[in-house]
Image (cartoon, rainbow, N blue to C red; front, side, top):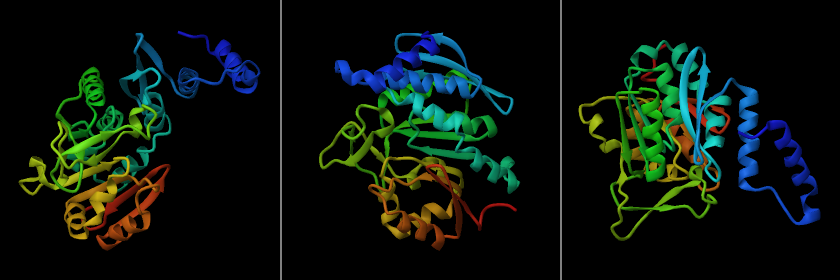
Length: 285
């Protein structure tokens, strides 16, 4: 483990004076900066350290948990800070608790699950819920399994697929992400590939008329496809109680999505990068 004081001295020298000898900050430097800032901002214990990752033990509201964080160039440390340090999804949890709905959370769909941190967070508060984690990248899906296993999280399914408006073949794209997993996205493929798309409405868990109690969507722009057909969006929203969606303004039309939410009796507020919405017809008060 690096010494944090020595690291930051070297970091700021490189950041402000590195041009004198032709060096600049590396992905490893940025990883360690975020890692040490994480440790300084919340109680974190390093349980294991390997050349590829760390196993961290943390606690939120007296709810202990563990998670693996891969080293640079992985984006895991940024996602970890977003979920567990900034706790953007805590506003969703508080809204559900305010509406006296906590006991009714039976099905969570995590569309764009990355490495499962959001799933771990939500299962801390809704441990009995069935959780579907949908993720198109194989390496991320493997991390989801590790993070669920180390926390003894049960009643889950990991689906290796991309979320799309209809069933088709997809291509996983990494060109905009600099190799960092949180920026991976998918595009429809005109030829068969080894990555299938999944239409949330066709999930077998919904075949009996079940509701989606929490639908989390962070799919790097593919939300455009989900909301381009108003009727399909209406059908999905009609069975969704709570929605937490990251709208990527570089490719998605925020006003269009918000208008569809409005048409389908959703109220919402912004929390960090998230739009957190509730179906006024389905939520308790």
